Image (cartoon, rainbow, N blue to C red; front, side, top):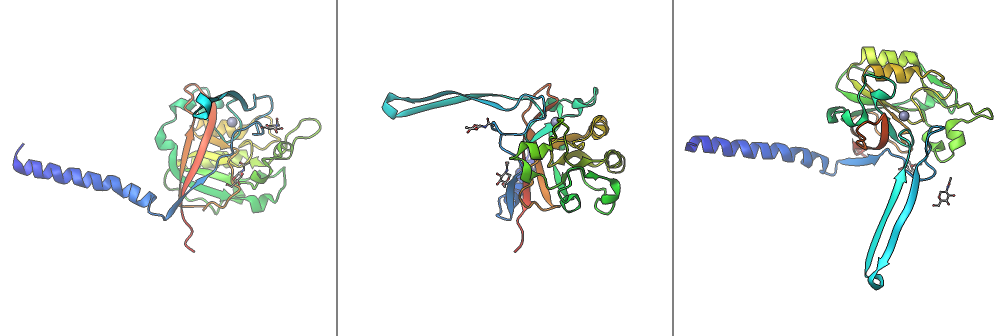
Length: 264
Ligand SMILES: *[C@@H]1O[C@H](CO)[C@@H](O)[C@H](O)[C@H]1NC(C)=O
Ligand SMILES: *[C@@H]1O[C@H](CO)[C@@H](O)[C@H](O)[C@H]1NC(C)=O
Ligand SMILES: [Zn+2]
């Protein structure tokens, strides 16, 4: 290598290193916070009816050598669709991707929160329609859209959260089919749709049109998002990181947002 080539190479390396540091400099500058949008998994976590709940089994907790050492390990089992979780497109679309096949560039994306809780006003039969939102969305960058119905506050009370009636019908708010069709046709930049209720379709739905429309367009869903805290509507980055279950139709999810801190 000639001297000038060496110099160029060194310049290139330092520029690349600066580029790398730039992201860390931004994220860890103190201007951003990490917000956990995940409900914890324990024996009270809400699961879809007729799915195996989260079963946590204490296996080993041992003090050894007169208290000088410690060893603990547990086991868990659970259905795919409970707590804060992802629905892979394969859940409702035979040609769709499984959880383990979802690419990272669809899982680490800008986050947009659409807060319709004021419109829902605690009505368990509210169904979101297109006219509610016409003014809110602008086509733009790749993003995940999370709809806030104001339901996270009921998560600790499974009956209320799912709106279970005496005849085992469910009643909680959800999206209307025309919203799903509209998002998938007008907004090709949306890669996933999430809700702070148990399903993207409303509780009363029997045929799950929103699941069908979204999955056949390749979108994933996020259900049971914890939106108890304030999250900025725009400007956050979503980390949608499900357990990488290779053949999964869904999976438990750690859902985190990186958000600019409020300037006040
Ligand atoms: C939801 O998040 C809030 C704020 O972080 C937290 O206090 C609450 O325990 C969470 N709720 C559940 C059921 O996970
Ligand atoms: C969950 O486990 C706790 C103890 O860890 C227990 O007190 C509680 O009753 C259990 N809840 C259910 C719904 O089984
Ligand atoms: Zn699901």
